[in-house]
Amino acid sequence: MNRILINIILGYLITLVVNISVASAQPGPPDPPDDNPVPITGIEYLIAAGAAFGAKKIYDKKKSK
Image: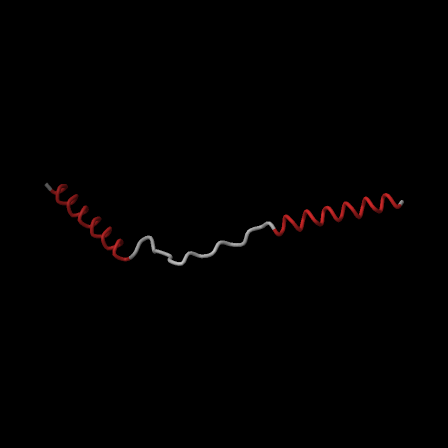
């Protein structure tokens, strides 16, 4: 009886130690970067719209000939 109780308590202690070590090993969330550059700003949209408009004008001009 005493040996069974010691084995049960020892099993619980080992499980507790393993769970605590696994839970504390999780890293925290990464820190946000100091400078968040915006990938596409307003000027890039204007350049892309101008290029698309120019391409359409050229396409329409070639199509009408």
